[in-house]
Figure 1 (cartoon, rainbow, N blue to C red):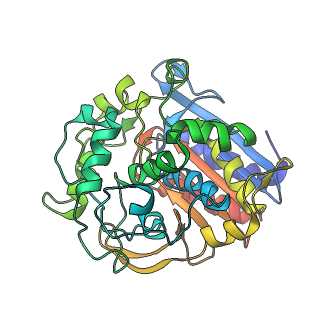
Figure 2: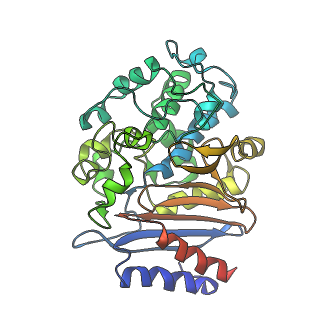
Length: 355
């Protein structure tokens, strides 16, 4: 797809590949209600070109996707945002509400019991760990990105209320109706479409994990393997549901999702969400210091709200997806090269120059 107005964005994307800052990625942008950029380049693994249907692990870009599954049930009246979690999840110990879970203020930012890498495939074990845990602060009194735990907290609520696991719910209720190429817990055929993640530099996983003993370190390294290429590129990881961090997606699918939200919950004539729910889901629920990220964050119900009014989520390593209601666009970048966000910043500069 090539809209001449957005040629500088295409040029920037090609430059990232040419100068080695990028090795394989997809970029998709919708503007004024229509797709204007949809491009892929580089390799998904050595000798295998990146194709339009190449899937890649996008880390926390999946958190809003998981949140939308739970919000769908809220929209249908199956549970309320201010319900105690324990009303729907008997035995859940923390006195947190559904809203606090969605807004990263529930006080459970790290799994409490050290677990090995293969625990990512044991949904019930990790949910039992969370149900029995004491919160690290009184729910609602502070925030820290629930880095690895978010998807299990949200996903188990979906399962308890609806009966379907999160991956199946997403496929049947959101991805299918809106034609989104993304998912949790990939089948073998979809795993064959995946790009292999790689480090931008060898120190990336050490930087990403944070200081040993810190909240960030505890949250990012348990279960083990979430920063280890041998795990991330394995059938174990791709086939498991770790919804906080292992959505596999195309940039096209992510951009379509945000375009639908930007349009008030309607895409290609299919309404999935009420406009009121979209407004509530993208409103700041918490505005203050995030104890894990070490900076001020405005958390919505699953996303970050930025100073310029845009809302969405970036993922560890450089992938991202968001909507900018002021400028009228939806943006998604999906990369296999785990590095920083300078690539996205360059693309956004080029995009804003076109608007």
